[in-house]
Amino acid sequence: MAKHSSESWKQDHPSTLFGNSVQRADRAVKQAMSHPQEIAVEHAFNSIEHAENAYQNAMEHNEHLDMVEQNKDHLETLKQQLDEVDQIVEEKQF
Image: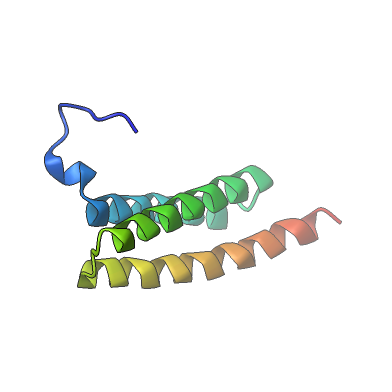
């Protein structure tokens, strides 16, 4: 991943990257919930997958912080919400 010199060192910190990716996944899931369409659901699934990768990275760097656990819990909630939206979208197709 490219590093941007204008960003602070915190941007590269595994727990910060994980937190940011969970926030992006949260926005994507909310978008899918308000506009239950296949493309929005697909985008949200991709965002969640990215966040899960960031979680693995944080764990590999021994980032056992409360914030990481809170974000992991939030990510699990987002996955459940997205599964519900995905079912709605699939039912619409029939």
